Amino acid sequence: MLRLAPLLSRPAFASLAALLLALGGCGDDGGDLAGIGGGVPAIAVSLSEPSVTVAQGAAGTLSVTVTRAGGYEGTVDLTVEGVPAGVTASVSPATLTGGAGGSPVTPSGTLTLLVDGSAALGTYQVTVRARGQEVTERTARVSLTVAASQGPAFALALVPGALSVPGSATGSAQVVVARGGGFTGPVALTVSGIPQGVTATVTPSTATGGTATLAVAVAAGVTTGQYLLTVTGQAEGLPAQTATLALTVADVPAGTYVIRVPATPVVVPRGGSVAVTIQIVRNAFDTPVALTARTPEATVGFTTLVEPPTTSGNTVTLTISAEADIALGTYTFAIVGDALGVPTQSVPLTVQVVEASGSGGGGMVVAY
Image 1 (cartoon, helix red, strand yellow):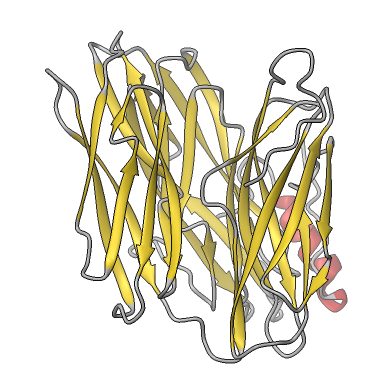
Image 2: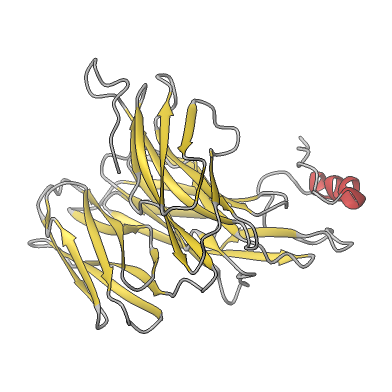
């Protein structure tokens, strides 16, 4: 059955582009830019493999490639949908800026699928969605088969897998520990590859549950560039496992700003709400910034409020409320900043909806 894609934003080419996209729109719609001509800005996204099998207590990775056409050089946000319970999905980097893209030889990023022993065996369709500014969204799908572990095992993943932290600032990522094959023991976590002037610590240093937090602090004067931090997990009787974090130490350019959101997923209970602090890091920039929160397309059941909606300061509070019947799972919001004289900014915010704890869970507010 043919599926009509949304019209492209340039009216002069809208009819032609929609027809061409509809003809090729069955299944994945994201990997082919052929047929989109006439200078219409467009994006495409593809994955290195159509399917992957991952055992419980293990991780699988695929390359993600974003390509562009028609002169499009705006931001592209990558999100993951359709992830089953017990599976952690992370795409790194989650945002490609300034015309960044890739090719089959040089991928844009990596999709990691970490499978815990709680994940039900079976095959699932996982979707990577690419969103740009005033271009048609594109998707790529991978068939994920969750298999039984052949013995005790564990694996690690970092969410997000990439952080950008300027000097004199901090950031954090969640260390996710997946166990399989009946393994329930503690995992000792350490960090290596830390450059001079950067502090990186994992709390707790021994994970007995499914998560820990990697906190990164960058001192003033640290040389800008990208560094690779490695988190190593060790458990008695099992091979050591690792996960990497791409840390970018970057200056905030003079005359602009950057948006900072919590790096770890924000947890919202069904029927409840959560308050999140959004930071605005400025460098010689005092223009008011208007912030909005965009929920995933076609998702209902969320209400968002930004206070104040426009600020000349350094923080705002985002309140996210979830209806009592919203589907459990992980969602990716876009936090968008608009200010005069500088490009629009968009950063992803991961939100996880969980069951309310007890009968009094609704209405709960948690500060991040």
